[in-house]
Image (cartoon, rainbow, N blue to C red; front, side, top):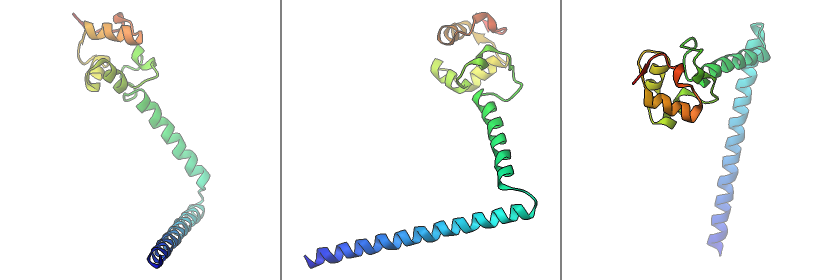
Length: 134
């Protein structure tokens, strides 16, 4: 019984020490954040402006990655109107992402059976592929 009580006291002490460590760590993070904010203000900047710029950059990166292509690469192709990435489309039809990107970018001819599969699954017209191969 005494051993059990001692074990429980030790466990409670460990939890208390861990909680104290977490509080010290959180205080350290808060202090670093306060110092960074003061530094930005000294430079005539604000956290809100920096956060706004980061949000804008994130949105631009998301727009590029959602399409699954670099901007300007055959952007008018119907495949880019779909709400999924090129990588997701490629996986669903059993081809590599790079192969699909090569077909969309007209660097390689797309096999008719793949174009027909895309038409059936995603409604992309077979005649939208100028580089169709039989």
